[in-house]
Each structure stands twice: as structure tokens, then as C-alpha cells.
Image 1: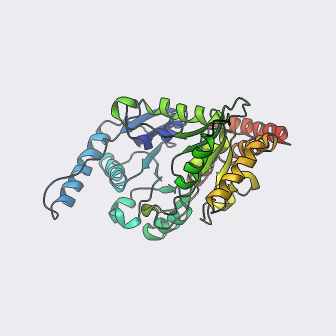
Image 2: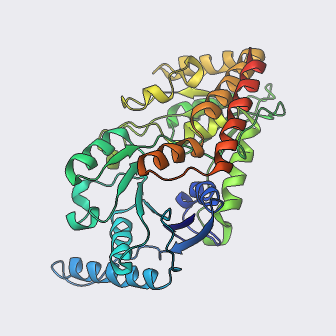
Image 3: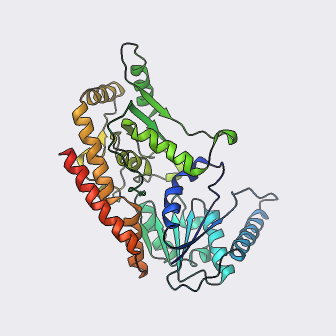
Length: 363
């Protein structure tokens, strides 16, 4: 099987949002012959307002042509072209790459993992893809209706054979990473500053300075290693973030915390599509709106070590059961009538056994 992935360079410093895609790309690279097409980071175009769209379209065509020229030839009927898009510009670059190549393989898939509205992309660009997978069920339905391209919902996923933990060494009592309710975070920091307490609260903020970032693999491993050393994590949905336009999807921060064996405190996402994928009681311990009450609940839970440990094991087991990237790929391959690799099928069996053993440890 030949796999072509279109994304960005992961080997040097770069934007923090690219780090979470390293595990996916690394797994795809092990499916057969592989190439990564590295699109340049987006830059603004200059000129009067009427001219900028034309210049942007020309730049997209030039980038697509350049990427297509560098692609390895392949006559593999099982070939997969997999483009990861976090911006409308990247959707257009992927479409222009396909157009310039003529035929990049029998199966052309677009992975939308940000809030890209159907109208943000030229209508003809959507038509270059055989299938779209999308991080948000609500948005997936809108894209399918507007473009006519079959679109599937992909909840968060991770290579869980490599990234899961049931470790007992967890010196960090509470970790916050990514979006949060700052009032609750600040309250917990205030409580943890009490000199009579030995507990530790960590606010994990990914570095953004060019001289302080590493390749995506190193940055992702640093995040996950910190999570696996944590007992509990705060997780909140992006309800108040304008670009989500009122959508409240299940995001990767939940999965990372579950996989790392953390208990989770926060607020569950409101999206109907999210609920079936976090339908066990321990997935999120809902915090009250009142800050003091929320702090009291967290403190009480942290004081109950056995229950907190059980929550973490159940979360890890559920993640292993339903949120591995191989499970997403298995469904996609079935949809595209592609042969699912034997090696991945064997690894799915390992995941099932591992999930059962972790659940048994929780019980």
C-alpha cells in the first residue's frame, strides 16, 4: 500500500497545534510505502482587497503544482492520498495538488480537524475528494449537505498502543492544559499555594517562542509524559470560542487525559455527536458553576486516592476500547473498500486484550 500524507514539516520548530498530528502521521507511515508532502506555513497576501483573492488562488495553484511534481509515481490500486487541513487554505492546496497530479491514487481523503465552514472553500475544491472525515459531528453534517461529498465523523483518536498509561507514579495532583475555566484554575492554584499542603497543581502551557520549541514528536511526548504523571486533569469545551460558532465538540484533550490514566474534572461538551463517545460515568466529573463548590469537589476527590485511581483506570480502558486511530482507519478503509492491513488488525486485537486487562484492574 502506498500512502501520501499532505500536511506540514514536523521535524523542526513550528506552531504548537501541529504537535498532536505526529502520532497519526507516524502510524500512517507504517502502512506501507510512504511520503509526506510538506506544505509551507500560510502567509498573507498583499495588495488591494479585490486583488488578494486572485493572488491567493494563484499561490494555492503554484504550491499544489510544486507538491504534485515532487510526488512519487504509484500505480497501486490501494493507494491513499490523505490531506490534513486546519485552514481553508490547506483544503485548497490539497485540491490543487490533486488537480495538478491528475490522479494521486484511487482514494483521496480530506481530514478536517478545525472549524472550516463549507463556504470558506471554493465549491470546485471540495469536489476533488472522495471522502471527508471531520472532527465535529455537527460540522460533518453541514459539510456533507453543502458539498455532496460523503463525510464521516471522526471523534478524537490516538495511537493508544504507544500512548496510554496505568502508572501509579503520579506526583502531579491536578493538571490543566489547553483551554480552561480560568476562575477554577486560579482557585485551585490559590488552594495549592497553601504551605501546609504537599499537593501539586500544574498549568501546562506549550512554549511558542521559536528558540524554545522542538520537533513535533518531542513536544507531543513531553505533553503526554506530563499527563501520565498526573492524577487528574481539568477539561472544558470550547463553547465560548467564536470560531466554533456555538458548536461544542469532544476534543483531543479529553482523550489524552483518559489515555494517560487521569481522572477528569470539568464540563462535558454539549454536542449530541460527542455523547456516545464519552458515555461512561467517569469520563468527566461535572463541576458546579460556583467556584468554591468546584474547588471543594476537586479537593474531596483528590483526598480519595482509591476512587481517583479507579476513575483513571476506567478512563484508560474506555479509551483503549474505542478511541484508537486504528479503529478510525478500519472504518475509513471499509467505507473506501480498501484492504485493512493485517498488521493493524492484529494490533486491534492487542488493544482489545489490553482494554480488558486495564478494566479488570479497575474492578
